Length: 65
Image (cartoon, rainbow, N blue to C red; front, side, top):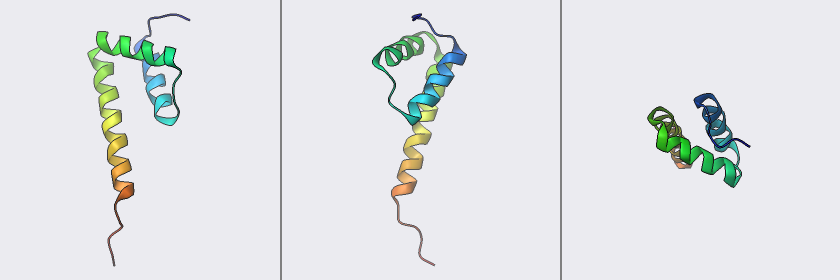
C-alpha cells in the first residue's frame, strides 16, 4: 500500500468515508494528505458540513399544513 495519495484518490476516499467507516490506514493516509493539500482539506470540510446539515434537516419536524 502506498502512503501518498493523489487528489483523485482522496476524492474517492472522502466519498467512501461518507458511506462507511474507512480502515485506519486509509484514515491516516487521508489525514496526511489533508496536511499537505489545502484544496482536498477544504473539500473534506465542505462535505462534512453538508453531511451535518442534511442530518440536522432530517431531525427537524416537517412543517404543519
